[in-house]
Amino acid sequence: MFSIKFIKFQPTTYVLQYKNGKVRREGAGLAFFYYAPTTSMLAIPMASEDTSFIFEENSSDFQTVTVQGQVTYRISDPQKIGGLLNFAINPVTQQYISDDPKKLSQRIVNLVKVLTRKGLQNLALRDALKAADMLGAAVTTAVRNSKELQDLGVELLGLNFLALKPTPEAAKALEAQAREQILKCADEAIYERRNSAVEQERRIRENELNTEIAVESKKRQIRETQMEAEKSIQHKENELKLAQMQAKIQQENQNTVLVQLATENARSEADSRAYAAQTLMKAYDGVEPKVLQALSMGNMESGQLIALAFQELAEKAGSIGQLNITPDLLREIMQRPVDKPARAR
Image (cartoon, helix red, strand yellow):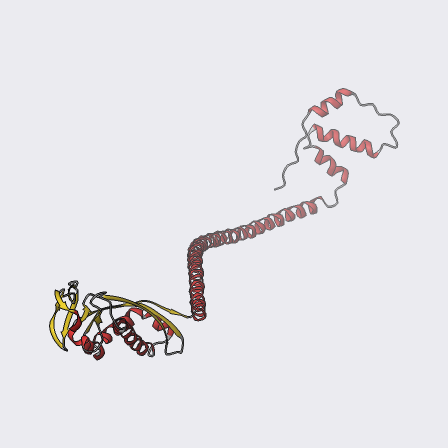
């Protein structure tokens, strides 16, 4: 009577009750009485299980990559896995009597490891670090479709790669290379900025030079216009000067003709006077000087007579003892205007 016992399971646990080697009862979340000496039970959990993993693999360039992630699975066919793994429990303690249930997660992790190795063998370290999501999706598809899981009756619910890390030395090398690349990009950016600044400065200077050229061109056009105007003015002035010179030349020619005429007239007049004087001299030839002087004195003014008298006195100054000239005489001489000699005609 003490061998008949009662047992109850959770709804997520699929139970197989064997008696004398045959299945007497099966289902999820069962509760029943059983006879302990002849009964054995399998308790297969149907809830999802999360298993973390971390392992190291090599990339195609022989660099070690540490893969860290988590796999989620559940048993979809309890009967199938119950025939492959030992899920027998102790009815009293409800604890598994073997290590097979614990090995299931390791089998799945090993499968993930194998498929991950295949994926990493086709990727270099840098590409593998960049393609963690793509690699995780590929491995998830491969694990879900694997025949081993299907034979076990296990369904893969999810697979996530939480991290793909290189070794510290490789990480430093990649960091150094990335840092150098970043510094190179920074140098290129500085170069581009300086080059852009130089280009802008060149454009500004070119615009300034073009402006100066345009200004100088305008100045040259203005100067050419001024020179043309000055040339036109000078041409007009030259024409005016030429006209004036021609007028002067004509005037000088006329003056020359006039002078020639005046000279001929003066020469003719002089010849006439000379002829008259010569004729007169011939008439006076042989006449005494005193007579001629007396004749000339007849037509002289009083002042001229006085002057002539003083001349004669001067000529005979040696024989004159004393000469008295009254002031009245001098006053009268000084007050009387001197007659201008008649112009010769």
